[in-house]
Length: 478
Ligand SMILES: NC(=O)C1=CN([C@@H]2O[C@H](COP(=O)(O)OP(=O)(O)OC[C@H]3O[C@@H](n4cnc5c(N)ncnc54)[C@H](OP(=O)(O)O)[C@@H]3O)[C@@H](O)[C@H]2O)[C@H](O)CC1
Ligand SMILES: [K+]
Figure 1 (cartoon, rainbow, N blue to C red):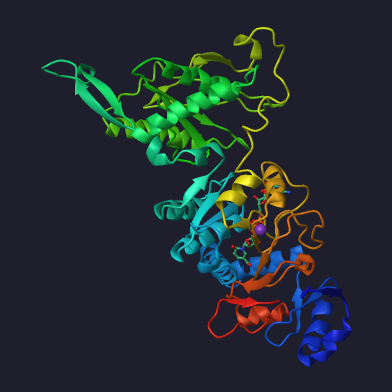
Figure 2 (cartoon, protein in one colour):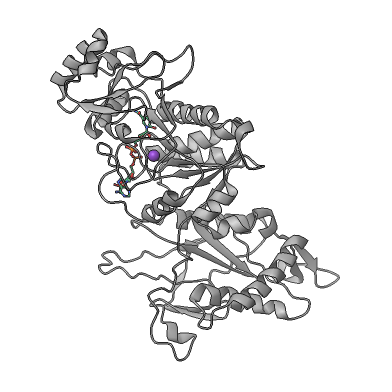
């Protein structure tokens, strides 16, 4: 391996007088500073930083130097895209389309990932962003919009990758029911669906019929009850998912619309925005939303529910909360009793939703579809055991065989100690300065990015940064 680490006084530091004096001064500042060897560009030793030091430097950039997060994130994310383009040039990719999966976490590391995706798109790659937990902050809304405007696809979980949006979109044309139509009710809405979708629906139906297990699980049941409709001549099914927030699911079936949202941390903003968006969309398209007929059901299994759920309003009218309703022919109750729809089955099997609730594609799907994965899940603020949904995602990333390029820190690694059984990226792009975990990186490419450190700050923290070549904003360290 080209990168090694040593702690405290390192004999090889003496080979470089500048580094030796920097090392001595740095050691008086923090006993924990460790040095990484970087053989590129003449070689030398580079300090690496603990979690706390990285956070101090970061804070000082914002407070003392008045940088905004957007500014630094743009430079950080752009340098990640440049490093990826250097390590994996378009012409070297093995798949016919230059697809890259960018997995973004809930913090600023995820923001770097969004910026990286946008620049990769400008460089000619075809990025798809997996963004399962989106923070409700303007910065991240903006970054997401920028990506969406550049036609970068977003995944929140696997089903949305299976059917392209254009197939799922129907044009609803009002056809007059009588010769002198006077009001909206005199029109019948006729939905025109893409022909390819109609064929697809038939294929899905026959596939589902062939593969349905003897005791169907809930999601299969929902789809099955919708798709049996296709058995009748001259009929078809619409399941239209056009979420405003990628993590909302909207199911349209005939003239019924259902909005589904998984709520975490009591944050209902995206759900409420979706309803507002739906009401506005209906009104601007001359469709009337019948609030009286709209019902809301909340499934809440938390032990201590703490707060009561405040009602939602559509066009100023409160939506009635019910404890059960019939959805696509299936009775759903807030306590999800299995027996409502089946006989002879006691309770809900523990493995009811094993595959269906998993976030993101499987390792096989990633290997098949993407050339590489950009890991922007966690950076220097990661602490403790990985919480879901990221535990499942990291387990998948451990199994992929396509290269992984990690932004700042391989996600899931302890920022200082690394992780022997974590993901093993092929590329690491350290931002500002390498963190101590970089000593355990054994992949092919280690880049330094984020060329925004003012010289005074570099001096204060004894960063001893290497000379970036010319005007480049990344520097290869191994
Ligand atoms: N100066 C620079 O070099 C710059 C670097 N940037 C990038 O920013 C990250 C650091 O960003 P930060 O937002 O501080 O933190 P992270 O992105 O690392 O992660 C915070 C989120 O992660 C969640 N978290 C933490 N631990 C866990 C865990 N064990 N399981 C699940 N989730 C976890 C945390 O959730 P909370 O619930 O604790 O809030 C946060 O949501 C740096 O590495 C660079 O990539 C900037 O772009 C610009 C300047
Ligand atoms: K990362």
